[in-house]
Amino acid sequence: MCEAISPRDRLSVTLRFLATGNTFQDLSFSTRIAPNTISSIVNATLEAIIQVLEDKVLTFPSTVEEWILVAHKFETLWNFPHCIGSLDGKHINFRPPRKDGSKYRNYKGTDSVVLLALVDAEYKFLFIDIGRNGRMHDSAIFRESPLGIRINAGNLNLPPSCEIPGFNEKLPYVIVADDAFTLKSNLMKPYPNPGLTLEKRIFNYRLSRARRTVENAFGILANRWRVLLIPMSLAVDKVEKITYACKRYYLTVSNLWSNEVVIAAVIVV
Image (cartoon, rainbow, N blue to C red; front, side, top):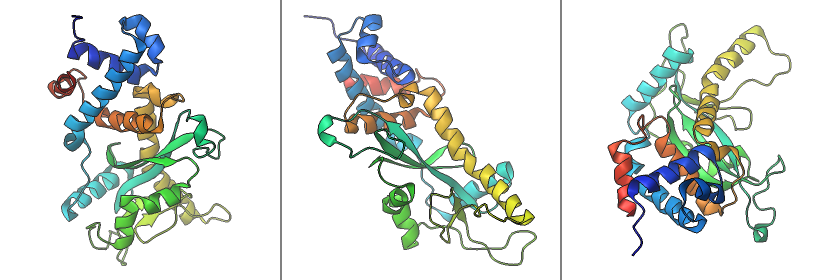
């Protein structure tokens, strides 16, 4: 019988694929593993990683105290009070099957699925929604996402509106976003550019400082896992799985050979 591929080798191949974005054929030359075997190894290891790290990484605030802590970090680090997260979408490019036609074609002329994310002041992901086709507008994706549904229903358990130093009016806690999103009582976007007063320009600058945390988080994520920078020649379900697994690692596993990740690889065997 052939000797089984060890868990360490399985994890090594998967991490190399995520970190470099090389094709399975390229990886086979350096690992001496057949491309079809690498394909099954990567798929199974990603599923195990998601299963093991699912509840350890992405923690969505559920209490008033947790939301206040998120807002305190934004006020301390980025000087924007009552902010509970920065929201934006990122296109993950891939090459869909020909039968899908232009289903995933976005406004840039490429095929993609959208990663919608809510990020805190320290570039940590609080909420993600993956898989909407690139034709959809960010605002529509947010409206149909679980986060958007809960905000519209008013059951996100946000802190009540309160005053901030220097203002006598009560202000709500808000998510900051760009012009692509619809203005709501708990979603703030910048003023339109024409004819802005000094106060409005200062507000836009402060909002931009808070909002760019999600842009920075996307940049750090894609540069750490460069598979997200190139169009993937894979089915859409595998693209979603790869993107979701990369979130498990993002800014959470300081040592890629930690016990939890090795356990995830062992589960595959």
